[in-house]
Length: 232
Image (cartoon, rainbow, N blue to C red):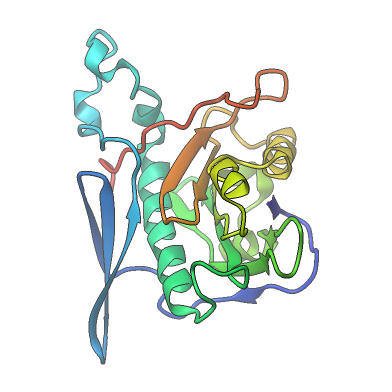
């Protein structure tokens, strides 16, 4: 669950959040971090095939028709994958255990202030041991890049291990509270055609959902869409 209002304490994680470089191959994207202790790599899964470079998007070519939304949003997708790698690194190194109910949500926002998509700081939220519906406050990440709600084009956050396979599988999708936050952003001027919710499931896979209004949404619509990394 995500929110853009203050609901308690969050912890900013500014140091070493972003990979020095990253690349994608098949269904995996890997970021490399360099430090005095040497290089470390952290990966996220992309459950769908990576698409061709945006110059190859052709509406007349049925092979690429399903990927057309990324022609508009691949700059958001690229920054989202980078942020997801940063979140995955945090999950892998926070000592809470990926497969325990101590693991917390982490999240950030992506905003376009007119000079390209930026990612805010990664912040920590709650675990299932702390709340029946863990949440993360994304006001600090938005403020860290001086963005308004109207400039937000993406939200990237994790859904941690819940202890229930039914819940974990449902958590591949945005929660009702996640959609409610997106509705608030659109009501405050966010571009509904650009806004995407990115969910990192407990297995480290990144799922992307294009914004749809309340009247269009069902339990399985919108479907997850492919991510493009062509703009990295």
